[in-house]
Length: 179
Image 1 (spheres, one colour):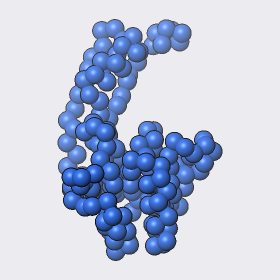
Image 2 (tube, helix red, strand yellow; image 1 turned 120 degrees about the vertical axis):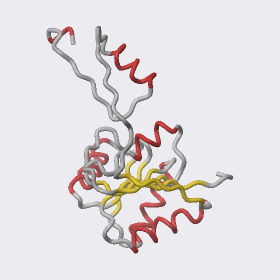
Image 3 (cartoon, helix red, strand yellow; image 1 turned 60 degrees about the vertical axis):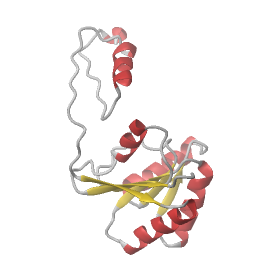
Image 4 (tube, helix red, strand yellow; image 1 turned 60 degrees about the horizontal axis):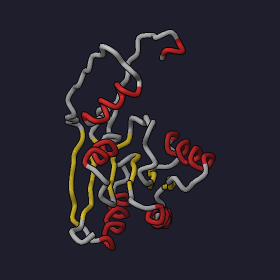
């Protein structure tokens, strides 16, 4: 900021904990900054939690995607690279246009996946939490969490990628007590 003549600066984020907000101010060395916080409510999002054993989660996802052709695009978050690869294979076997995204991929492959999703050529991205930062696809209709995210903040950040155009969208979280 100093190197470019100390212009007026605005820092924006969709969701941030108080610690993250403080860190943004600190990292940007903002002085006399105003903090504007609006509500987190997103009335167009429907949230659901579904109990399911690990073996039934994929079956439920396949059933949801293959019996609801009007769903549109979405993201399925998983906890591991192996799970992402496994789910995308099953979806593709059921004619769902799916791609996989995780940090183990090279930059060119990650760009290819992101372009396929953003253009609508791929309906679904099955991804670890490496996917999502900077994604501004407004018509994501669903976000499914196959595995529990690490924090409630991470969950809300990821789920909040659905319905950015204000249209009805849903967020589904699977859980199982023993997993």
